[in-house]
Length: 356
Image 1: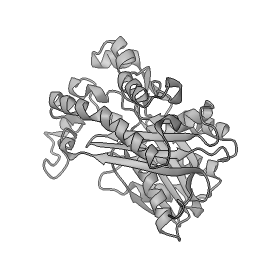
Image 2: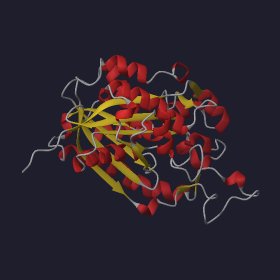
Image 3: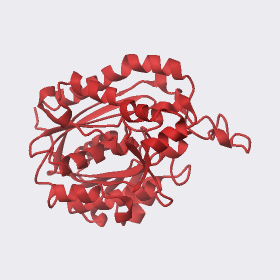
Image 4: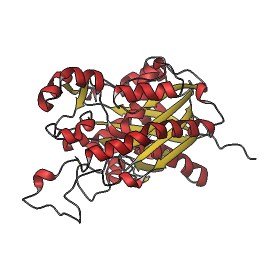
């Protein structure tokens, strides 16, 4: 049996707008009691994008930080995989091509990949697979932004579980032979949920008209039905993909030193840690940020590095979920040798938007 090819994440970056919507403001706008926003939804405050915080632009700013940590010049990037969300600067538009151009990665080819909030985990797996399969590729940049908070009507109680949506950008540099080694992964999709959360107008089934513009927002078609079906499956599938990713990495759940998790309600976060036998200090709860879509796992890793929660040789697992429905997990073997001072790099990478 041949040895696993060594492919690693050599740089991480995140861009977080400086604006915030407080729990009190969210409660006032939605009619949900503030204690519920704080204690049940797990939102102390959520990121609020500024006027210039567009998805692809935020991906560029995150990518600059990731490349700096990796010690890689933009012109040395071979492939750009854009994880920018489908809701972006322009519709019917390949965001990755613009991101690569603005970044100065003029030698790279670029493409977009979309799996809603599971996209970053999927893209890192794809980057690894590409480096293993194609000897001509040496550096892959995964980068993009998220701003689906624009599509949430805080007066619509049917989308209450998405009141935590915020905005931000994230990036990872993936290379051969060094970095935080990319190990096993697990991806599960279930199309029976594919029509539960969507924007009902603006596609071929219901083209935009002057009369339906107000419906151009994320909506839940059957909240009660979705909740019943999802509660039966979701938490168990979270546990499954983490266990499978860890097993495919030749490790056991108790070996996990850090779980980089998406923001979700506090009870679900705690349940997953409990089911995996992990204490609370092995994860960071993103209550001061909210859910930044596919950026959550990258931000979580940076916060963990900044707080000294990851040491050389530690096993970290990224876990994500996205409407549609998808559950993803991917394991990394953390390397203390990455970057010129990982803690300093992490602190810079999660600086507020004004510091860009």
